[in-house]
Amino acid sequence: MKKLFLSFLLLLLSLHLFPCQCPTLEPISKESCKSYNVIFYGKIDSVSSCKNGTSTAYFTIKELYKGSVIEHVKVNFDCTSSCMMNFERGEEWIIYGTYTKFDLLSVSFCEHSRKYFADQTKDFYELAAKRTFEQEKVFLRTELGIQPFIINNELNEQQKVFKPHNDQPSDINKLWLLLISFGTMGIILFFTRKKKNDK
Image (cartoon, rainbow, N blue to C red):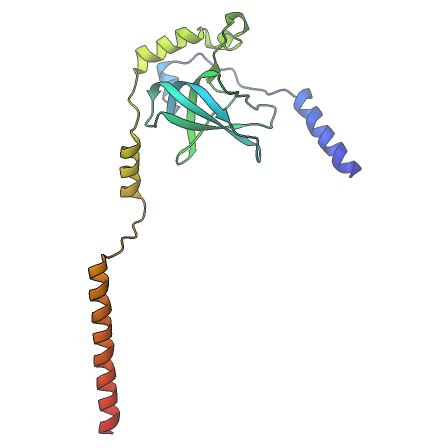
């Protein structure tokens, strides 16, 4: 128990002693936007608890600049390492997300995603971005435009096309199949009995 406690203490200390080391990030450009699958400005509705090093923030998108998504999306993020992100309900963000798996959108601390600060003097993202939050929104609107959301019905139709089908026959077809099966079994039984009687 003592060893477990010491290991946990060392892990906590290492997170604080060795801060996240990100490579130098250039301000977002039209070219660097190509490396992201989904780009949007949105507000956080809720955040899940941290589980297995990952948490999920649930967003309502206010402006979609890139990607095919519905208005309400979930974004996965690291919640335990020294490069963990911190999302809270009610915050507004510009999200630059990539798909790690099909339909699993993720963000990283070392990329371009940034939070809105009511007090602009607290906006530490501005130093690397070389733009205010509002200026970045204008840049994205100008360069990428505002895209329409996928409607839920369209998404459902797409899923119907791509997922495996398990179509069941109608009740009348089931009855016909049953009658044909019994008829076939009766014919087989008749011929096997006749063969035995002939012997």
